[in-house]
Amino acid sequence: LAKTTQPISMDSYEGQEVNITCSHNNIATNDYITWYQQFPSQGPRFIIQGYKTKVTNEVASLFIPADRKSSTLSLPRVSLSDTAVYYCLVGRSGSARQLTFGSGTQLTVLP
Amino acid sequence: GAVVSQHPSRVICKSGTSVKIECRSLDFQATTMFWYRQFPKKSLMLMATSNEGSKATYEQGVEKDKFLINHASLTLSTLTVTSAHPEDSSFYICSARDEGADGEKLFFGSGTQLSVL
Image (cartoon, rainbow over all chains, first blue to last red):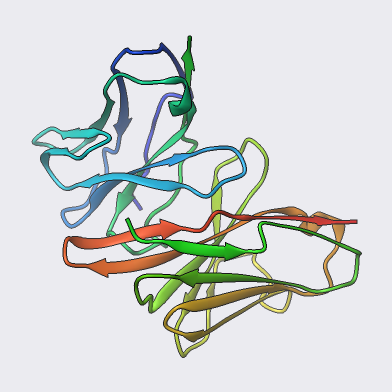
């Protein structure tokens, strides 16, 4: 199982770009990297998934270097509603047994 | 993204009773669903993997007879907490695997807050 390491918490201000980095040194060849967002008392919400290089969708970008031992979730121009816990998961997509949740990063967006 | 519906969102029950939680994939078929448990300020812990038409696979330390899982169709999995006790109080979350055209992804239900009195 590829373990992940993320900062426990981060603070930002409204309108700023936020980058959350996740380390996954033991990532396997067929592992994907997936990021989820979770608000209190809600289930995690899928944000973005990638395998290598850069992936972008309407809410975020995911940067993955060539060695794939880390990844960075980039949230452009955050708002107060982006305050949440963000989880980085590494494993074969769809295999929950290998998608182990780490501690996550509590992002707090300040006015 | 795909939608996973989980009901009820909150349940309060007396000690010794059983509680059933439903997890439905609304716009896709899910041969595999998963059940998690989450304590306050903690991360999600995988409890079991629910396989359509076969027995669930439980993680180490999870009591099979306490947490009954049924996955009778491609869109529905249920978790029944039997003879619930206060220590079973927790936030339970399900997820379903969507094998879409752009790759496999997991989508989560909104969770069920169980309080056992």
